[in-house]
Amino acid sequence: MVTALIGGAAVAAAAYAAKHGIRAWQAFKARPPTLRKFYEGGFQPTMTRREAALILGVRESVPITKVREAHRRVMVANHPDAGSSHYLASKINEAKETLLGRTKGSSSAF
Image 1 (cartoon, rainbow, N blue to C red):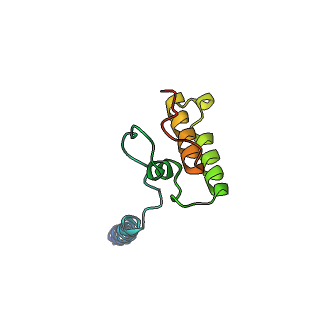
Image 2 (image 1 turned 180 degrees about the vertical axis):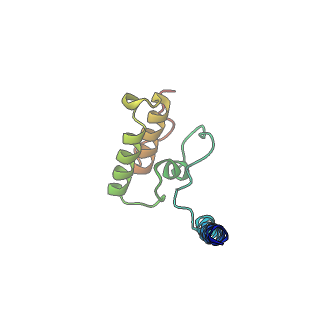
Image 3 (image 1 turned 120 degrees about the vertical axis):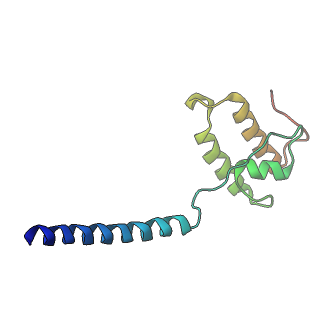
């Protein structure tokens, strides 16, 4: 009699845990994505304002201070001294220069 009671309690506990586990999984799957989608694809031969804005993660018509903040944030994450490539760093710098209006073509060294 006691064994059946313990077995029933164990089955009820397992069902209760499964029910809440399924609800938690459904809530996890239904949540909005929190990670930003990064720019996918290769670089254009000459950088456009659109491409520069995508690289830095800002809009094309953004104030100069926001361009500088975005450039600093991206360069901290992708600096060659921290293990990133020099090519990527040059493209990030080129994106900043393009958005600031200081370049007329591809100034990348690569």
